[in-house]
Amino acid sequence: MADVSIFEILPEEIRLHVFQYLSCADIVYSFSNLNTRFNATLTHVCNPMNFNNITYQQFDCLMSNILPKIGSNIRSFVVNEHWANFISNKLHPIRFKFDLSSIFPNLHTLVLDCFTDADLLEFIDDIRDLKQLLKLVVKRLDGQRSYELLEKVFTANNRRLKSVLFDYDSLYLSVNTNNENVSYPNIEELTLNLIYCDMIGNLFQLVPNIRRLHITFGESPGVSLTSLMNAPPLIHLKEFELHSIGMFWELSDIADILSKMPSLHKLTLDLSTDDKRLVNGQNLPIILPSSLIEIQFCILYYFSESQIKIDSLVGTWPNHIPISCWLHEFQKYAIIHTTPYNVFSMVVPATIGRYMLSGWKYMQPVEYLKIYGESSSIDVLMVVQHLHRLRKLNINIRNDSEEPIMMQLTEPVILHLPRLKYLQVEGKCELFHLLNAASSLHELSVDFDSFSRIMDNEAVHQLLQQRIVRLEIFRLRDIHKLRLDTIFKLFPLIRNLVLSVKDSSVFIDSLVWQTLNIWKEQQQHAYLCIKGPLSDEGNQTLRKWLMEHIYTPITDSFAFDYQNKWIHFWF
Image (cartoon, rainbow, N blue to C red; front, side, top):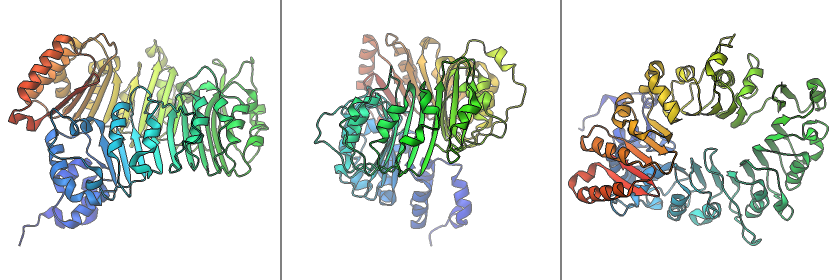
């Protein structure tokens, strides 16, 4: 009789509790193929199946030996572009063919993480013949806003996709089609970021059967909707979200868009305006479709008059649309929002925290928050203290005099961020209180100046060193001062390190040589990505090193790729 481990006979509840402390890759790598029951449990717990932040040897074993045996049970899978590069790398091919349809015959949802637009265009061709695949999620897409990308995605998997979602950290896409005969009736759900608002008409033409549409627009000098004139109505659309704080919208703009949505049930507006008519409650209800069941909005209203009467403004709204209003007289803007405001994501100026009263719960469901503007750390804390469900927080603030403002705090700020896993910081922001409240944080993205302040702050460093698995440092400068071995030593759990330079004239040669030395001495097992140009001498030296090592037995323990000014090391 085969030996049975104690872990195998433990109650299901205890095993599931243990799995909460492990990554998906660790669970599958350690416990797969113990028995049939375990395999079924693993695919249920690891949903989606995500192999990010693992060593190269783990990846090779998982993809070569384990996935082919459990792939038929997997319904949702994450492909990370960083290791997807190595699959098709002709210089150093991985020893198996990554055929999605044969490995995952029952796949329903595919998540693509950290791709560039060029790599995504190429990878889309591999998404085919998956009969169950209906949903594609793209996260943290980077690149040059390729015009053909969106339509290419719509054709993926032999046009079987019904749902396509680009997250809020992905690049802003373009839609440019003048061919009225081109459409993708298979698409029923779409979330994306568009560069210009005048692309909305072309988008409507492409997705005639859309039922759920969420759009975030980039910044623009003004609103233009000329393409909307000839766009067909979206007769199947039931839910629409519009997020746009980078330009001023008028009541007539919203009316033009809603005129194309005769069957709409739910409307969400998150935008900026200087049009008094749009914030007057007597006007917006008139242009709403008669089919509408639910409306929610958050409007940043910039006013020109010297004084604005909040009570008069609030009083214009009907009782069935309850609203709240905050006034920032110095900067001459007001925030008008429905109560409650149940959205997944928000982009807000940091100064609104000063008007959020104690016990404020209007926006509790928010999981993704971006805070921007000229403000201070205390402004950030005053916003975040009300949002306990945050999973991703992006802080981009400007402030030249942090210390005096921090001293203005008169009431204690109590933070509770048990779900926060990802934090991005650009600008001068005090991090200790945020990090102390975020026990589940494992991904950190910071500019070089913020990272320098972290390294100089012992208390902040102590909080991070046993949590951070993925670290990104962008806008690098003073490269010669950056020591990779020190980073790995101070952050021992790091499995994914991404570095990028700000100035294209700054060469990354020294970082590459440090990386090769770390690999040579076998000091670390991690994935390291460096974005930036190599000098001519650096290119020649790296090419020589690669030719000397690529065919040696030791290459079983590492992988290397260099294209489009991205150098990838995996060891």
